[in-house]
Length: 201
Image (cartoon, rainbow, N blue to C red):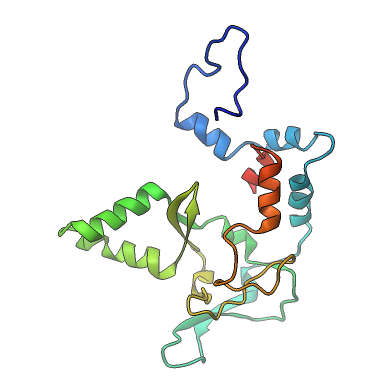
């Protein structure tokens, strides 16, 4: 924030108050901030990438089903396509916005209760849900977890090296070899200290 704020002529602080609502507006900027940002000349690369995302065809949830996997006795449930899915499309994009996010503060409280509180029995199912179905990742530099709230949560996470995740720029990565932040994303984040186009998507 210190880098982003402009100095005032009077020398007074540019912000009278800086509360949670103000911080949230920087973390999740409004559409208007993205529009103004993308009108810069030359246009930031991230704006073109965001537009390209909207052109990708989406196969919605009705094209998939959950059933018992035939991969083995301990395989459990799996997600299966009911139609042929071409390469390079989105799947279940409309459901992805409803993910359950365990933000760092919540994540830490749950971990602390499980590790140090003898009365934490009631929270054990939440702990099992967060770790059993969630993806661990870094949220603003702190450990967090996100769980897909749709039946895609039964997809193979690849924790045993069997994932086949990837994207158009690096299709052969696995969960073990993937970088947390792809190189092309890092390039955009260094291009501008504050990038509403990337923050919103």
